[in-house]
Length: 471
Image (cartoon, rainbow, N blue to C red; front, side, top):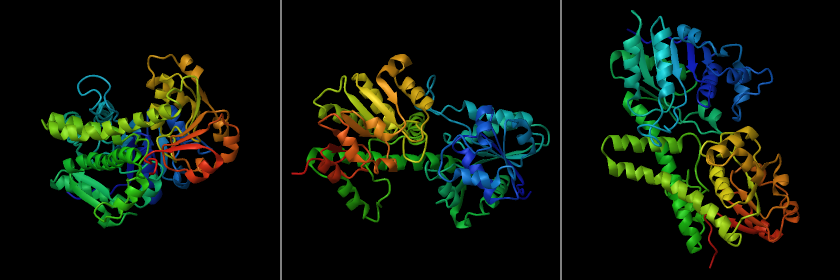
């Protein structure tokens, strides 16, 4: 056997990973036809919209889509046709944390992965390379291979690869254009190595070969979880230190900057905040906790669980700071929350710190006004309803207002909370905001983005996460 020359790629799943990743592959590999499929007609219609109003906000993504859609990049709901024609199939479906059953709250729900795998086996009439792109528990490829082999047609061969993504929302396109590494895992058989070589040749169209790492299948699956867990661990570590800073009068920015000069540590992911969010960090750590427990490693499970617990503590600590500072009660008070996405330059709200903060404020019967430049109103209401499942949406709407500018959000408020580090929040006319606020006027900066000296000169009382009162 020899490596297959890939000419047609199918990606099952048009979400945050599949859409941008395969769009960039199409742009960089004009000789390869790439078809992204999804059963959600509305999502595919959005990807195909004439005005390029694509369903994901990601800087640079629209330019990529403009460059190749209709040429060698296609979006379709015809899953079967794309499977039949493809040489290589990415499985890029959602793997949320289970909400019920065995492993609820920790294990990944692999329902969509299994469904996609069974669809491939049922439809394929020729041999395929099947690539795990979704974040999955270690050894998921083994169950996928079992399903494929048990249901394959005569003459059909399936080779399984793991090719996890390491994208950061907000910089995903740049991450795809110039990745730190591309990781491809395969079985260490000749057939597995040939399949690995086929996918390597696709990425080698623009990624330097020394950045394409080929490893064993199980190592690849575990590396994705390990990378996210260690990044989250750094954030939880610096957030834990931020609590000490506030109690002692130290400044977490100064501490983190000095620590980051150590070449063994480095400066990245040492920025304190109200807490990490997004689709990956918490989900992947909980997955690692569940894996550790299933392998009878309770001490390892407890270690990684603490990373998540520290993240929840940071959010709770910040919301308590708001209450304590506002004279120990926010009942009936009006608070502006600026930012609802889990980070700047994305519309993604999954595990956003803002959701937890607003839930806490509502439990104190405060009135909350929300502004975010990219999150849709419907998404905000959905997230708040899920965060407050025992409260009817109509009751939530009596206390929550969504507006379309930061100035509007801040008008006639007692306090402003910065929950997302959008650049525009640095550039607000804070004098105008102050003039229109109830006095005393408070600002709580959960992202360390504001000019505290300037705000204090205007007249604000400012609380910044990780900064204590200097002695």
